[in-house]
Image (cartoon, rainbow, N blue to C red; front, side, top):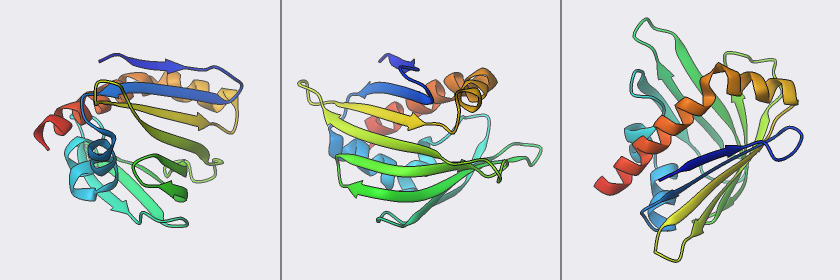
Length: 156
C-alpha cells in the first residue's frame, strides 16, 4: 500500500493510506488501547503509554521510550468523535510543552474493495513547525507506523 504525504495548503499536512480491512476494524485498531500498543510508533522504541478516553472532551496520550530512556510522548483532547467515521483531536508533543497544538481530523472511508482509506489532515501552528517535523524524519516514522498497523490489522 502506498502512503502519501502532501502539504496542499499553508500549515496543512495530509497523510493518506489504504488498508486491507473494513473501517470498523481500522477504527478498533486506532481506538482500543490493547490494539494501539501492538502497532503504535516505530519498532526501535517500546510503546509505554496508551491512554484513550474516547469521548468529546476526553484526553488521549500515546508514548514510546527509547532504549536509553528518552520518552517521546504525544497527547491531546478529542474534539469530535463519530464512531467508525471520524476523529477530530488536538495533538501536542509533550517534550515541547509550550508549543501550540496541532489540530487533526482523521477519517476512515470505506473503499470499493472493502478496505479503508485512512486520511489524517493536520493543521500546524505554522509552516515552519510543520516543515521542521517533516525534516526531522516524520515521514519515515509515519510510514513504519502505518506498515505496523497494516500488519496488526491482518492479525486481528
